[in-house]
Image 1 (cartoon, rainbow, N blue to C red):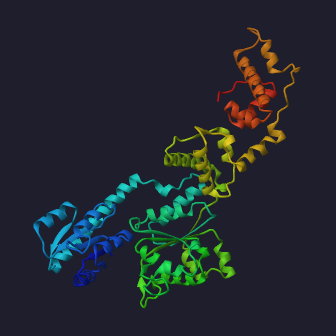
Image 2: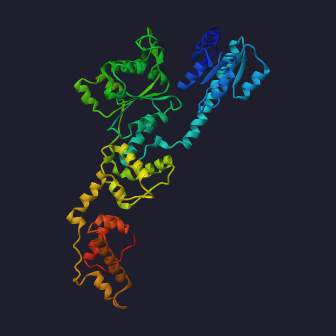
Image 3: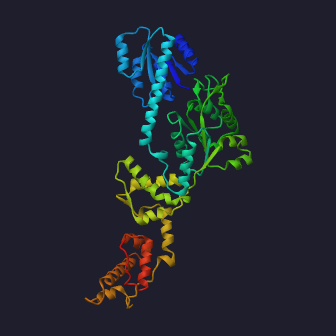
Length: 482
């Protein structure tokens, strides 16, 4: 249903125009001043605004100027009982769709509104096509692991429908990004996306926050207030951490899901909304149902399409992609040059299990951008990540080759000292020299393979391979360069 707002300080005009438009199945709101109208337009989405030129306080022309700067401004129809050609010209110049004279002609009003709605619809379609070519897919969800590709496929399928979605996963895995991606790919993308953190609202206030209240309905209710469901009308409401919602509030949410009905605190009549509900939780709602802390009927209403977001430890192959993206994004925010990461530091970051999930990796990257210069090395890693390096370095089978025996006939240093032209091929000389350099580096690194690999600028696994090769005296084996 197209949404219209009528702004006029004459109540009779607002009432008459509303009746005419509602008779044609338009959803109509009214405001008695430019200031109130502006506040409503900022809080909600309207297709057309009908406003008087002469208003107390801010004039209709001044409001038109402000609306013209909005990225998603409604089409504006101006009206006046003292119309002058200069007013019409000025309004058109500022972007007004049409200019009507009072007293309003019913057929002329309906024709103007119908045409304005059609242009608004066309503008939105064009904008959607442009956004499809400029907006990153999936609202910043990064990952090419099988688990993340499965989630992206699910988002693509469910987004165009009206189906409710229940997103589960540990804290910090990015459940809110999944919710935003579903909204962004839906036909409600140009409407409001309202996020509600159910765990952050006190139990005694959550009903007022969700459904609003009337003036004087309780102590401190000095003015009437829209609820979050009402603000999300025709859009999407995201109920984050819904497992923490009280049973009393759950029953009210269930009523909205069943038939769109709700009632403001202190109100005497029902109101209706058309809202898509997406919920998320880090709890096991089946267990909560069994414990009696979550309504079973609400669980089944919400769990139409379940999407589980796995912890980062179960998709560590995505860490390099996330690491580079976060470093570039945060560096841009701080006005700094993106950092590079040494192979060993990247390897350890790719092995860490991230109990704080994506949020923890993002915080680590922000720390790097603030504290590091040019590149991130092993020494810059957090202590919990460095423990991986220490554990691997203390593994006898992998980390401590036998020390150099200077009296050993196979000592590469001694072999280099005795080389004469014609005594070996160029390939063998290259391998003997490489062996000598690796052994010297291991001595300098106190036989710590991980540190030696970083000094040499190669992967630790590659260094182990070379050590094994040279300890078997395979000096004549050809090997591609790294």
